Length: 213
Image (cartoon, rainbow, N blue to C red; front, side, top):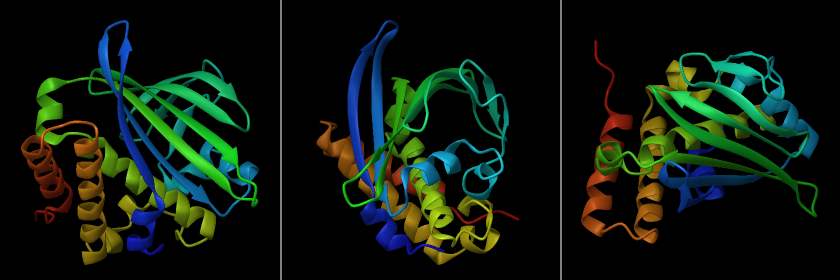
């Protein structure tokens, strides 16, 4: 498995805002530059045979205007697709709709920058409770899985489906470190220190709680 401490530091995180037709929205951006060519990362992100190895099984029509379903998670519609540079889709979960966009940019040294943007309407109660960490920690785990897949160290399963890792101290440290980074991002976006701290503490507790039973 990829070194968790190094992975946390390799990721850039941002939080912004945007005005949509239906109101204010939060814009979460997470990115990492991988030591892999653009075509390989595009294939990892769009090939239904590779997706279960680092993300989750995805069924449906992975094409423009096609409907998709992430097993046990969100569904949506592919709204834009520009192979092998970007795709955008709705992210529909729990009766709410948000939007994701993945962009891939080659660097001058032969590597590729992966960037994921997640735009969601502000849900005041949920946001006050968890802040950006609720979704942010999950996306951090996703980028960890992609890093492992590209490096050939993933073992063929996503991190959250690896019981040895999920129950380990390394996993808890990773989740806590991710939550802390999203706390820092929340502060930088203008959230008060007390509000950001409380949200981060609740996020950390949620992700690091020992399994029951």
